[in-house]
Image 1 (tube, rainbow, N blue to C red):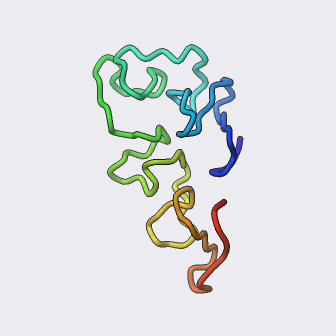
Image 2 (cartoon, rainbow, N blue to C red; image 1 turned 45 degrees about the vertical axis):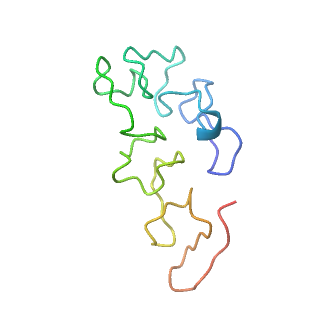
Length: 109
């Protein structure tokens, strides 16, 4: 398992790359080496609540958080961590601040 900056992630161990830039895994948290996808949306059947009905755009980064509440909808971040408390997930945040009152803490990558 990697972090937001690693070139390759495979959290479910099915040997299918998860990273958005190289997205091949259509269900990154569930082992599904066959990548079945009956409705041809972006979500594999193993993770799709409605595998026979297309529902594109609900979770574009396939991290389990619907885009409407995802704090980083363009990058896979299932933990939705927001160290700086600025409502931008660490995976998308230019500056990651583990102590919001300190005014800085480094960069995400």
